[in-house]
Length: 128
Image 1 (cartoon, rainbow, N blue to C red):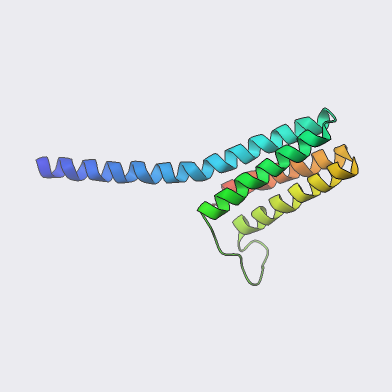
Image 2: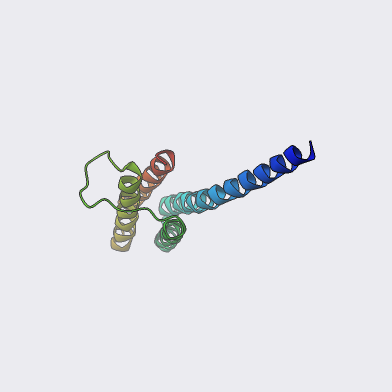
């Protein structure tokens, strides 16, 4: 009886540890989504500096997530074969477009790019 209880306790501790590892990944994604939301609001308030700053912060969160949980990029890209990688690349491309458009002073296009980046990020999270 005591042996089965201790085995159950060890299994529970292992599963609890595994769930906290998953939480760290989701934490970076959640923070990136929050930063992108603030970036869009900054564009709506005609705050170019805020859009650039928050988009850069979102990029840093995603870079940290990819550093903590790396995955391989495909050598030959076949559409739909690696959805996580595709959405990740799309997210970074749209964030770069948002920053580029904001620097040009085109806040409407910058806000649209930031929104598309957040859509890619949400789709990436679902494709795990």
